[in-house]
View 1 (tube, rainbow, N blue to C red):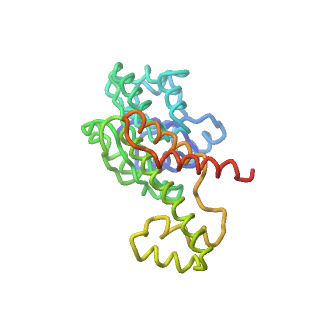
View 2: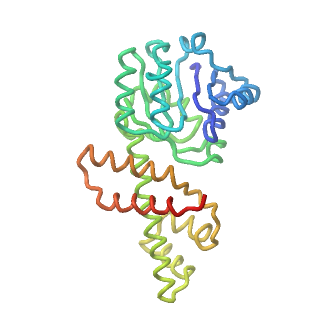
Length: 274
């Protein structure tokens, strides 16, 4: 089985790495939190990464890091660990990243004969624990085929296009979701002022063309109840929206609603109590 190196053991990375180990893949792990790193090694039987000793015979590197800059620093920038990988190894970036930076990393890695897949995920911690994440993969289909069995340990895999496509599809999906949230909130506020109950409006939405994931899974559970546990973290959503706007600019695509949507989310973040 492929020897795997997993970078990033945060809320999502930790259960994902554990699933890789449970599936029988030889695993080395790395994280800046040394206490967490030790715990994961004890619980999974993984080894703590010694770059000069381990990376030369690693087959797959999985990165689950906070952002594109962290991925770049790890592979080709500050730490430059990609130069230690053997030709034929593959980097699979499952982080929240940016398409253009994924494309640039793919080109840099190719110089050393290292393959690339961008494979961002949809799902929460419970889905990460269960191995039921949705994984969107950008890159060469032949490369995905070689590593599909490994990725299937983590969830359902869909190939969406060339380098960077995984990250592009993910953030554009986030944009559509963010716009849907705003439209739903506005509709509920307006209909209530008109004298119609939110429960009534919700029933209509879910039985007609206004139905979507937000109306089905968020109104009763979070909006009407008033709970703060909406799972709609503002800053990650704003970052996804900014990336979506950047993609639109790069390909000269329309994004008029997108800019207004981003502005609304930014205003919400400014008003959010600390």
